[in-house]
Amino acid sequence: MSSLTFFGGINEIGGNKILLEQNNSKIFLDFGQSFSLLDDFFLQESYLSPRERFGLKDYFEFNLMPKLPGLYSKEALEHTNLAYQEPECDGIFITHAHMDHVAHLKYLHPNIPIYMGETTKKILESTAETTRQKFWTDESEIKTFRTNKEMQIGEFNITPVHVDHSVPGAYGFIIETKEGNIAYSGDLRSHGRKPQLTKDFIKKAQSSDPKLLIIEGTRVAENETRKNHTEPYVYEQSKKVAQSTQGLILAMRYPKDLDRFMTFYQIAKETGKKLVISLKTAHLVQTLKQDEGLQMPDPFHNEHIQVYERKLTKYPAWQKEYLDKCIEAADVRQNQEDVLLELDFYYLNELVDIQPQMGACIHSMSEPFEEDPVSQMGEKVLFQWLNHFKLAHHQLHASGHASKEEIFQMIEEIDAKKVAPVHTHHPELFPRHLKIEKGQKIEI
Ligand SMILES: [Zn+2]
Image 1 (cartoon, rainbow, N blue to C red):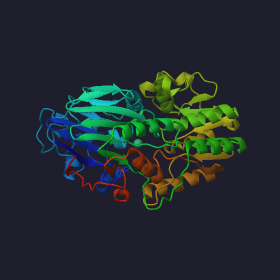
Image 2 (image 1 turned 180 degrees about the horizontal axis):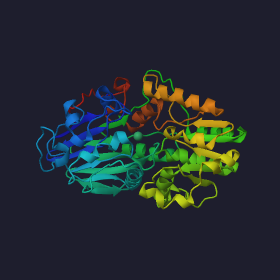
Image 3 (image 1 turned 180 degrees about the vertical axis):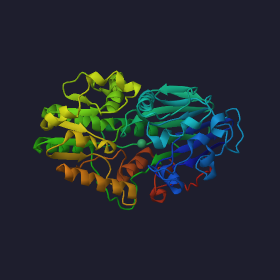
Image 4 (image 1 turned 90 degrees about the vertical axis):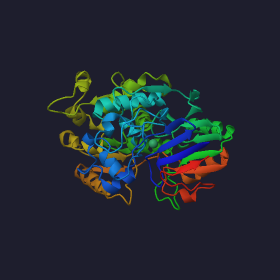
């Protein structure tokens, strides 16, 4: 008998944590942090958050993590009432490097192997080094794969297949069980720079004749209010902004969205400008440059890329070796006309040193959520800054997720007998959907 239990990703965007069991074999698909459930008891970006020094204690109190034996490390359980046990799980399979899919790996027992794409490992290692976040313990065993590599884990046969998403190295999985095949989409879209990857997944999933399709539905809603742009559209419109703007151009994007980085890099090249990036981005791009498939430029040896040094009183060790290759605020100030400056919201105060005279800001991230006061407050602050420095605002973004129409089209093409909607607020809108309760076992 095979069964699935969804410990996260049900009636919420993110937090995917799906247990697949068959006799004595157990694997998890993704092990992310639920943002919406965490928000019920804690506030992101504020001082009320779970106390990391007590491991899983605060998480268990509010049922924010599965209370399963044989899953967690001694340290994670030390302050909880769940007894430590030797591991009883064959592996964790990660689709991609976003926090809502990986954030809780650090609590796992180090003897449970974690499987992820080669690129995902590189992204998380670079992020760990540049942000002091920890994604797994020093003893954890990380095993990497590339697309189509079949793996036999316990009684399951698992094949990762690449998909297009807003972070490189994203995968879906095809899993053979005794009761039939399961396809799991992870997060995906067909309107990025590499739609072919998603097509490959759909084809492979369809030919496996799956009994069950677990598929994301971030943008599935009765009516979608936000715009439905493609990456080529963002490129074309942003290029127009770059060509028609006098003065400095700010480009704001999600740090791991390297498709968008490539879009801005291409625009810089074609308009004779320089893309000025942060040291964090430079570190990530340089790490991924080793992967030829991604075709990343060398951030320190490219005539259209410069790396920006934020003035600090003390520099972290990883920055030191790069500092003599960086430019500073004064360099940007003197060459405003020729610069496309990538700047995170948190570093807007660099503008005080740069003193833009005029220009534009390409906001290449989601529009603020109506129901999210933090993102609305953030937008208000952003507009104040842009007005102060006479920068015109342009909202130009392509989502990392397929639209409702695209998702439903995929469901039709893959043609599984049943559909398990995850990563969505509207599972009830999906065709052939299973009714799923968080933490409740479902037989396949
Ligand atoms: Zn994602």
